[in-house]
Length: 599
Ligand code: ADP
Ligand code: ZN
Image 1 (spheres, rainbow, N blue to C red):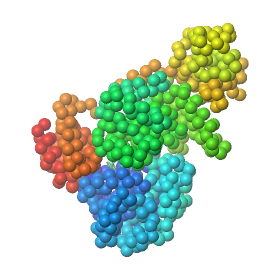
Image 2: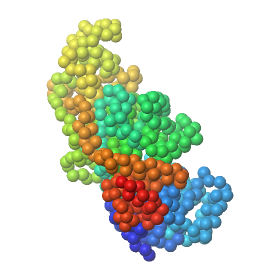
Image 3: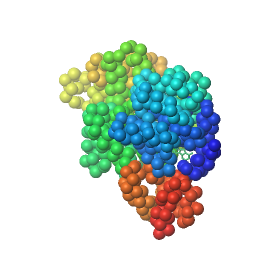
Image 4: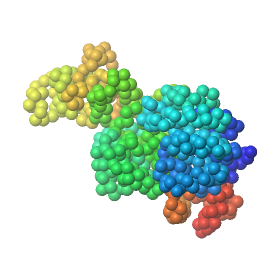
């Protein structure tokens, strides 16, 4: 058997393993089953690709995502590994050819969609083939509770029954305990060795800012921090997706849309564009993203509040798979709290489901209002023990919010709710507190009540932040009957009577500090380096186009960055750059040296 490390260096061009890769590979290569829980970008693919090359026979990889399979295959071809794909997008002739080559032992890896794998015909076919291993990617698709549920995945237990001697590896980036248990149960992996990595994504900077005008804030964020970068913008509704994409285009950005209401051709076209071209902004609902393994997504922005920390973590996790700096940025405001709570109370599901949804939302809201490190907050939500302290790469750590005693202001707000009959939303209440004689106020004679004008000293946006925070703290409830109307809760009384003090987060004035830090972390290239970087990118884009693959399949940004920094002048020096294996050196070495020597 060739050694795993030799394969890593020679074929993949990387100097050493990451995290638990070496242990997983050795266990699987020796014939053991494994369950691998690793965050996105952790390097799951190598965990089965290397054993596939170490063991005799072909590795069969089950994956639910056609686009992903194609890209993985293209990337393997680039480094000279014999791989193929079988899915419903191929012609019958093509399928017959792949099957023929499979039986003739001409592949190291075969990627198969689950529904195809499970046909009696295909299972019979692979009886005649030597199988190195089965890899079940995106294994959380067996979970009926998750939103990626695929019924066919449950039937994958048949693999173990029919091929008891073939080792299996199941992989997922879903962190929660329930999903983990379900995977083990459904796939019969009780005897498998479980490898759990930390779910921390240290290269992602988390930032949640107060929403004033979401779109404008987004534009400012992109313009100041992500000019020409690829990114994903998540919105709650299809309508908002379309409006936001159109608006960004109007502002001169390259934005496209994706949601479940579009035709499948249109969706595929946009997905392809996002994967293949550089610097595209995808505006989407959460329908977009599972299995998008584009490594150079530099930011994920949320214009609306996700329903749970699980969702937030998964969506933001699509940024920075290549390990380089990436931004998870979100705007969050009072409207989000009201809207999400209302959606839960109005949804027509069983009581238990509503309870679960409400709990998940509460956890998400607490993350938004957090006064301690966002990263620790999230990791401990997933049951990871984290060292107390600061991560140094989230907005809270970099710019700790001040907490103030807001008891008196909260009493004013609560009493204003009470005096106006618990029938009005935050906008009107703030007008009353600030003493604005609006038409509505005169109509209801709210300029005659005792709380009129008692909050003049604070700005409207400060009041909004107060109303938002006390609603999250359950001192106010947003009534689901009448839109946005706030009423008192069982907890309000203690505050009104002066028996409980309330501490709130001081509104963030600006995100400037985080900006500075971000820019500091981005690759700062000197002028000459910048020109080399651009030349390499142009060459890469041209080559990718000729080969019909995304640019990152040729070389990752991380590899280009190393080239710029090391500026190798000989083949030997080139060989030492991470991401350049034997095959790529062979194919592209001369082109790269020609560009590098000119500099
Ligand atoms: P996952 O499937 O866990 O999200 P991937 O397998 O796509 O992650 O790997 C993420 C990125 O990290 C890929 O670009 C891959 O080439 C790179 N990578 C994986 N393992 C290593 C390693 N040992 N050294 C350097 N880069 C690696
Ligand atoms: Zn932090």
